[in-house]
Length: 288
Ligand SMILES: C[S@@+](CC[C@H](N)C(=O)[O-])C[C@H]1O[C@@H](n2cnc3c(N)ncnc32)[C@H](O)[C@@H]1O
Image (cartoon, rainbow, N blue to C red; front, top):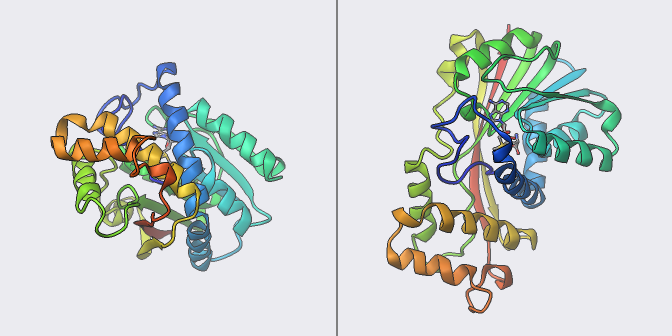
């Protein structure tokens, strides 16, 4: 999920490309927590996405490439759906890859996994060829997406499939009528910071030679939310409170403070009325 940087960060969308340092490890760890929680909350929807991907494959994939794999929520979903495939993951963050390695071991897929720690802004790593490539919430992070798309195209076997997934924004958790508009204003402020901004990838895909088979929006609407959603909402709201403080009104900051205050009746971790709403947009594109 959303999984992404909320607000401006050292290696966010608009700055710092190619400058990923150890100092980012703490930030990666907190993002990794959010990614893991997100997976817990939206896991079933990931299975819907991988099934959709499978419906676009021309043959059962032998090798699946997960680009910007993070903590591996997509990798695990791909491993579930393509039970015989070798899984190759690329990420520049050692923190993410450590989490992914542990998750793979816990789910019994370590023997099918190959990991490449690589900064895609520097160069495409020598990972070999693949039948299915998957880039979820990662393509908008790289400095030159068209170059990376061309590299993915070259790495795919003929007839191979690329699935690009992007989140339409951070998920929303408050039920209707509770602090109306607060989450929308936070999303707007995040977007103004360049967070999670991505273009329609269709023309980019076509420019490097892909044929787009389908672009589809997957809506997320879980009501009531599962228990992990409270922790996810709390993590995301904390980051928003920290990073968007200057862009929000005093009234909105006060609302966020109440939602984050363990002594307040509005406290997110105790609420029983949360929902999960959001959307992901996905593209399925073939190499001729
Ligand atoms: C928002 S996370 C998405 C993780 C995962 N695909 C998911 O959907 O949960 C983006 C991931 O892309 C990785 N990433 C960003 N820029 C990268 C680059 N230039 N090279 C390699 N990995 C990168 C980050 O380290 C992070 O793990």
